[in-house]
Length: 326
Image (cartoon, rainbow, N blue to C red; front, side, top):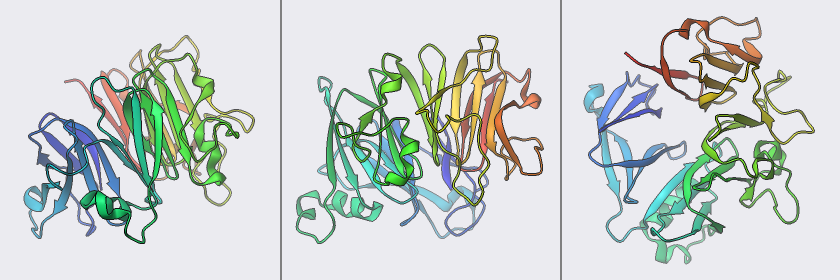
């Protein structure tokens, strides 16, 4: 289960809950502005961080009625840490950022080895150092944070200036960083994607082992690797082995309005209204039949969405969504 759609005053859940019951698009009322949502696996939680820095969890009630099965509960109290963003990888490593004051130009991040460690810390930060749990790693980055995202094994941060930082604790997946780590900018600390230097980024989309960035000039850059599996198909849409990232070029000077990334697939919304997808289609992510391998190596248009006035696109783990105008 994941928070697939956030509308004004409500969060809509799709998929199955933690008892494998269909949520049927449950709508959960929200009476506060939301800054970000996130999901963890062990323990299973869907979390929300408000613009005031408060942490909420969506909890499942013992009720067979989908409309009342879930509720929203605030965690901690007025003395709890004030957060701005939270993100959890598929391996349950957890990173949080603290809410910055209006004048602050320094981002403070804490990375925890496991989501359960974060929960323990959040409940009582002052006593966490006295436990046997591994202490979180503290990072400081210049700027103001506007987004924090988690992939399968890596984190990606976007700043107000349009800079993108990436890092991972797993050196086997350095290709997911969009940069080449070195002594000055190792893989396990937030490092600037130099290849994007001078290109202000307005949005970052992260999922699985792939990431994408939409620039203010409406270009899209992608980086990462295919979904790890036995004999994986090569994605022509991704950078080659000697490239850190790749500029999406579909010809005809096409600009882009939006981008989304799932676990092994991605979606683009072009300024001309066309929607393109690439990657895994084993769960019908594209809405059309592909080859026997259920895989599209390069970008292909979803022709059924032509003339549908698509306004926004995004991905779930193995799903693709398009928001269309009436």
